[in-house]
Each structure stands twice: as C-alpha cells, then as structure tokens.
Image (cartoon, rainbow, N blue to C red; front, top):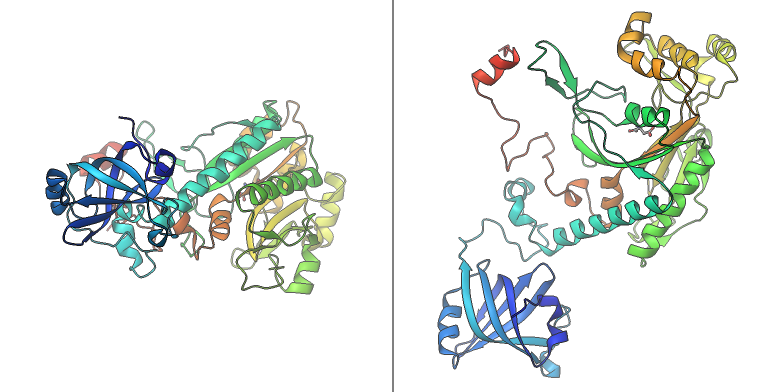
Length: 466
Ligand code: ASP
C-alpha cells in the first residue's frame, strides 16, 4: 500500500491508507485511543477502537515521539468533531494495524509547542528535536521556498550560480578572519571568506557577466541577535551594470518573493524609495531607517535603498581612513588625478557608488559598483594605509587580473538570514537557521569549538600558548 501523508488524507476518504511518522500526542478514552499522528506534512487524527484487538493492544503501549506505521480507513468526522486547527481536521483514520518502528525516550524538550517557553541553550542542545516543532518546520520549509524562488528568478535572467572556495585568502570586509592552518605549508594559513567578494569580481574578469551564489560567509565577530559567525548571503555580481540596474533587480526579486510567498504582507512603497545617506541621517538619524507607518504591525514591509554613502571614514583608533563599504567600491571621481585632488582636500567628502538595502530598520544587504581601474584601486589601498609591498602581497592577484581587460562591474549581497527572520516575524536569525551557534559562538549540540588531539596540532605545526 502506498504511503499517504497526514495532511493529504482527505483525498483518500473511504479508502484504506498507510501512514509513516511520529506519535505527536496520545489520548486514552478507555475503549478508544486517539493519537495525533505527525509527519512532514503536519498532523492527522487516528483513532483505534478496542474491537481492533491487536492494534488496540499496541496503541496502548505507544508514547509520544515513537515512530510508527499505521494502516486504516479514512473517515469523515461528524460536523461537531471537526478540528479547525489542522488542515486534515475534517477527517480521521480508523486504525486497523499499528507497527512500532522505533521507540523514543521521553523527550528532554516539548516539541508540540512553539518552543518560546523553553530556554534557548536547551533547545539548541537538542536542536534535532527542536526542529520537529511546527514553527521551525515552517521556517526552514519557507526558507527553502524563498531560496528556490531566488534561484529560479535569477536563472531566468541569465545569471549563473557558481561556487567559490571556502578555504581561501583573507579578504577585507572589515571583520576578523577565521584562519585555517595549512599542513603542507606549515606556518601559512587559509582564511575562510568573509564574502566571495574577490572571487566574484574575478569571475567578471573571467567573462561570466552575471553571477550569483547562495554563499556562506564567515566573520569572527562577537555574535549578536541578528549576527552569526557564519551566515548566508545571496551574492550577486554583474558586468556592464549601473546602481539603478542592481537596485531594480533586487526590487523586482523581493517584490516577487513577497507577492508569491507572503501575499498577506504589505509592501509599503514601490518603487522602493531611494534615500541619500545624508537625507537618511538628517531625517531619520539612521543609515537604515525604519520607514513603516505602524512599527507594531509585523506584516508591513518597508524596503528602501540608501545611496551616496561617503567612501571613507576616519578610524580614530588606527589613525587611518578606512573604506565605509570595502576598498573595491568605486568612489565618485573622474580619474586618479581627480581622486588624489579630492582626497587631499577632504577625504570624508568623497562619495561612493554604494547602495545599502534596508528593510524595517535592518540593513539587509549592501553592494557597490567596483573600481575597474587598477591604478585607482592601488591608490585606494594606499590611502587606507597599505604600503606598496602590502598591496602587492594582499591584492596583487586582483591588480594583475585587472590588467587584462576587466569589464566595469558591480554587485550586491543581501543576507538571507535577516530577510527570513523578518518575513517569518521571528525575533532573531537563529530561528531561521537549522543549526545556529549560541550568542557566544558555540555549537552546544556538537560541542564545538573543541580541543583537538596533540598529533593533529603537531601535524599542523601549531603549538597552543597557555
Ligand atoms: N561583499 C559585500 C558584503 O559582503 C557585498 C558586496 O559588495 O557585494 O557586504
């Protein structure tokens, strides 16, 4: 007999079916035993009569979260017994046979609630159980739908999804790198990418023209509610593009995500407003203004772009100018000479071809048109405090690449985690990530980070300084 999902039993009314899944809850009414049965599609009710002696005896022993197989007949429930809370609530399964596939110990956390009443450490320790709850099932399934839509949309627009390396070289996005020691070249390190920034630009040199990737990024920063040591970005790069083209692409894509997958949500304004950095700061005191009318309404979505950021900001601690976005961003200058003149006059006044993507008071992405003149790129590295040798050592590859016919290009990288958090009305991004780290960067389910064996360190030539 073919397997039927709990949510689909209505299509099989009057017929015998087979269910595979978990006991969600169990209620014993003497001559009747009810269970709420659960599988990936949700719940259905199964009822066993004492008349079905063998099934009844087995049903008497089963407990929540046991894995079982049921066969039985789908019956319509009388009107007053319809359960409006579940999609299959008009029907129930009259059980004929039950087979216990696997028993379960009493779970350390409840999974039939939304989980908000359980301490987060506990939930994360038993994440594989936590994921059984309807709220997280919904979040992960909807995340998949959003990502699938993005993939399809960009594929239809001639973008190519390309994977870029994870063990690589440090790339300057302004955070601390995660380092990976090399065994074959002791004393040398790979860095996990803070973003695929340089690779995606090199793909433009490589003639790909339209790239995207659902990319994992790694930044060794102190974690916060909407930050994780590793997070996911929709990374995009395009050749021969303009800021307006990039913004329009995002606008169309994000409008489609909301219209197709969250039709009950209301986009406050289309086209998404474009504010200059100056205007945003003066009017809202923030470069990621919350433009919702009613900030308590979770179904209002106020997308906006903030443009015309300053190119540089002064870092008092390091006593140097740093790029506000990153050094690959095109400053609004005519030439290297024009850049030098403007930098000599007032570095803080130079504007960048940068655009930030904002939603409900969160920065959900940022991007820029890139410098494609290797001379200007060198100058930018220089004024940020890099010596000629450092520039060669850190960025020689990209400067060399740019000598062989680089197309003008630009891109953007909206975060997937924050977007999902907002779309799902969740308080933090951990609720939309399958296996997140705690606030202090630990995976308490796997116990990571953890000590490694001394010979592993020896092989790497690494000594722990205690
Ligand atoms: N690499 C940038 C970031 O991760 C985004 C971009 O400029 O495309 O913020």
